[in-house]
Each structure stands twice: as structure tokens, then as C-alpha cells.
Image (cartoon, rainbow, N blue to C red; front, side, top):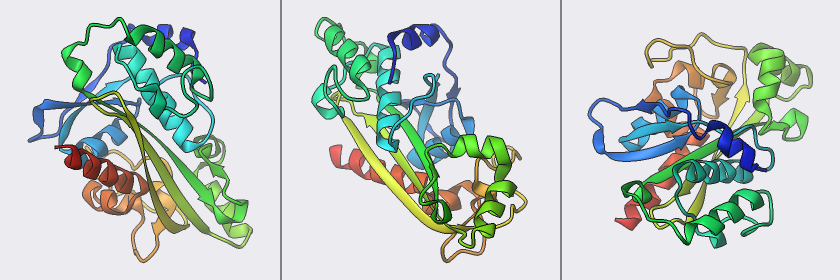
Length: 250
């Protein structure tokens, strides 16, 4: 759940920006995240300039809950309205109740800025292991921090089932204030960590990329280029649905 104090805590922090070569400097998407690797993938897929907004203190819930809460948080930082009937739980109730109610109480008296037409995007990704009944799910980051990719893969191998599914939910605040959620999934298996061949400034691949081998592929996500990964990853598939939705609005 988002708390008013959390919004105040980071409202005066500078947002970073990331622009891909050849991107349209006039087209801007706000991305609620502190992960520049994710921002690079999003910017490459959308072919738009992406500006980072600082993420909230960790939110818990389903993937859709978490991603939507992050978008509400970003809207609050920018002073933008949302349509509360598009938000899970509605104003004042559900996992986003406080943020939704806060926005509802302020948006009626707002003078809209040019940024009002901008899109705010946030995502959350889960890794669901068959051997663990779908866990760790959205809490994968904590598992990786505790045992690393090698430890996570060995747990699955010892339990005799390395099957896994990556799931991403992307929530987006559209120019009219409505919030839409898009989901992408990718089946695969966990393999021992493989050397990263990440082409983004030579930095290592993020998260569980080095151990996730998509079904039908011979390379893990970490061994693929950004463009190749975007075709197969759960985030890439969710972004594709977002792009299709945006194209339909034009």
C-alpha cells in the first residue's frame, strides 16, 4: 500500500533520463523504476525517450497490484490525475486506496500541465518455479539477494524440476488518465549460470537472465542482445501489448 509519507519522501528527488540514439526527443514516457537496464530495454522497444521517476518504498501484492501502485505513485509525484474507476479497488479501497483517494481529492482542482498528456509506465516481474509451486513469484529479488542465481538454480535441480515461468505486468497511465495493465509470460527452464553477453555498455545482465533458458532456445536471456531478448522475455511481450494498445489510440 502506498503511504502519503512515501510520496513526500522522494517528491523532491531528481529524476534521471535515458534517450536511445535516434529516439524522438519530443516523445516522453515516464518510467517508475530505479533500474536503468529496464529503462534501456523499454526505450529500445518503444523507440521513445524514457525518463526515470524514483520508485516507491517496496509495495507488496500481486504483480498487477504492484505495477499499478507504482504508476499511481508516479502520477502523484508529477501531480497528474488518474481515473479511479480504472484502478483496482476504486478510490479509498483496495491495495491502492490511499494513493487513489489522495489523487481523487486533488485532481478536481488541478490545472493540467503539458506533462498531463504524458504516459507513466511501471512494471513488476515474477519468476515462478514449478518445483516451488510458483514461488518465489514477485519476491524473486529477495531470493536472488539471499542465494544468487547459482543457488536458485541448484534448489530447482535438487528438487528435480527446473521448469519455470517468467511473468511481467506493466501498468500504464494513459493520456486520458486511465490505467491499463498488460501481461507477458515466458516459459523456460533454469540452467547453471552462463556468461553474460550483454551489449548494453558492456554491463552484466540483470536479475535471473543468466539462468533462464526460454523454451525452444539454446541461449539464456543473458546471452542475447537486447532486441533478441525483447522478442522472447515476459517484459518484452508485455511491452508489445502496450505498443499495440498505443498504436490503436493513434
